[in-house]
Image 1 (cartoon, rainbow, N blue to C red):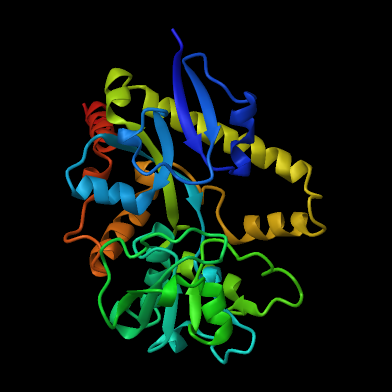
Image 2: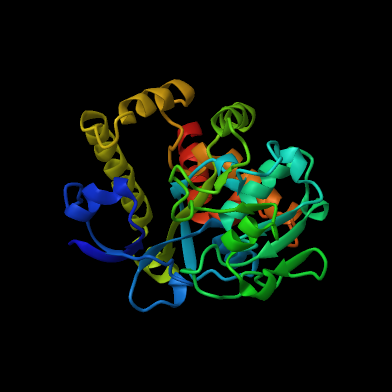
Length: 329
């Protein structure tokens, strides 16, 4: 019997083989719905059985005792964050430690990516209390919503003045830097007024990887607990399909690398700078990253206590203990 699961995903290129059916399973029929905005709470969503979701919001659910969603430690979105701090080309700021005492914009206070970016900043001596923060929309095209998530503090963490787009505030000097998950339109144009704070962000990211041993994970896959309870094997099967889709896509990308003139060079650099298993899924492979993220959420005042990897992924932790016990018996 084949089980059908409705999965909401953003347009990640390496999910193409899964979307097209090139990667499949006789046990699991994955119906992918492409979404531009993440499902706010997959546990309460009638249209889907599983979805890409924010790592920080999943952690918040577990901290709140909400067990309607079971996370799979397969991080559908990963990325270094040093490159995501932008300023203007006229700015004298060229190092992260120079952001101490500055006005910094963020697109959402507790967003996973911004949590990791503040973690990178903390490593350079700039903590939450060492800057003035403003949460707001990146551009005019983005909606005006509450991006403070209840973490606002007068004089320290506030909404962007007048709810104005942060790229405008940055351009006018109202902000000194902005954390952005995606570069604003026009950023890659030669006449763009913006640049990354770090000229050699890649070098900083390589050093970061050498220090911590992982590429930060921002989004994971969440499955309704009712679905996971009815089909206990489904979590592992879905994770395997995602891994296979990535493998097939990576193989093709290396073959058809001429999407930009230097893509082949980029693929060679990644192979030289990172180990083959840098994006491996699973609890054991990602334990250090998961533990560090939970610590950051607490250190930055987002969660009142540090959650363990076992609390965040109880089914996987239980499975690992059972496998270990079987191996030792």
